[in-house]
Amino acid sequence: MTRWLNEEEQEAWRHFLDGANRLLEYLDHSLQEHHGIPLTDYEILVFLSEAPYKHLRMSELADHVLVSRSRLTYRVDRLVEQGLVVRTQVSDDRRGLYAELTQRGADLLADAARTHVGDVRDHLMDHIEPADLPAFRRVWKSVSSYSAG
Image (cartoon, rainbow, N blue to C red; front, side):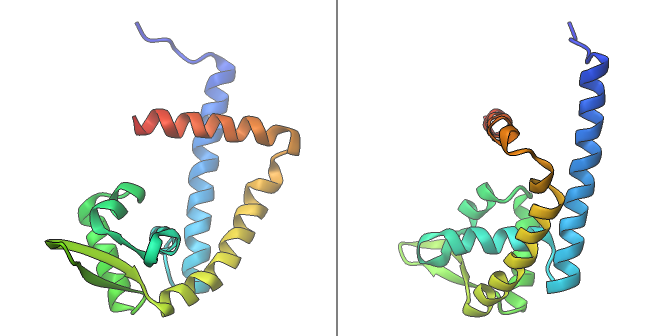
């Protein structure tokens, strides 16, 4: 039996959908306007920058980035064309490939991060009262864990 949303839950859900869509659209637009990269590419560069040796197997990167494997391949191809990422062979796996962050990619990421973090602060974090932050973090950690499982 379906547990329908009550009026308050329905209102919260609709505000979430509207706000999340608007926020992601704004973040994507801002990165493209100021740095020439979409939010998905920024996310790929962030994961590579945080990885040991600044590289990840394509399969590992696909697990981190919330896009299909074919879309990830397309996005990495574009990053390679721009000189932001290179593909390298995995030494113990003839079929395996790493996506590796280049210095040019790291430089772009450093610039874009200032814009992105400022946008996240202005359009999201500054709207959360400090006392509400633990609940905000707990809810999204729970949703993320549940959705991944």
